[in-house]
Figure (cartoon, rainbow, N blue to C red):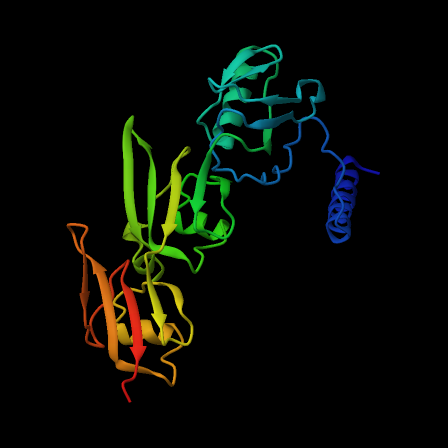
Length: 286
């Protein structure tokens, strides 16, 4: 059998084996030394995720298990690597950190062409806090470098019915305090100008929505959210409407003025309700 024919047979056999392994969902055997490694699987944190203090990582070097380690990124963004020493990877994406460790292994004459893969096993560094009136308050990882407010709100279960229409983002930018108020109604209506990119350490706060109170001859007396542009008629409807004994012409409104003093007025049904208003539906005279 000629060498040329032998190489052809081996190539066909390798191709068939790879196809069979893919169909069965198994992993093909490791490539022989000198052949390029198969592309690494995408880590759960995402290739754009930037490593931060407290992150736990697993570093694997292809065909060099002795150089594979599990480590925690220190507060200064450093991991200690065998034969290399401290490596500064805080703030780097996974791809950049892989390249930096590979370069250090090569420059230290440890490996000629190292192939490094990093997986984040526990995210503690690049996180934001979402608090207030959301479905699932807590801390969430910035899985990419351009995660926005809308994405993090979705991870937190969205704004609850009691939540305000405005969200406040606070943090630091270029060493300076940062604060931005975002109109969520406008945001989710398609205006993405305020859908800011979040940074590690940011806090997203959803306050409780402003409310008004209705009592007297209302079907469902109680405390209700002030919707944007809500009128007195709409406020009464939100409270279930007026009972058979009540009258929409005998509604009394108590409002606290800028000076803190309360004033009592007889509103028109198309007057706009303000936060803190108290509506009293009185009985009909007849």
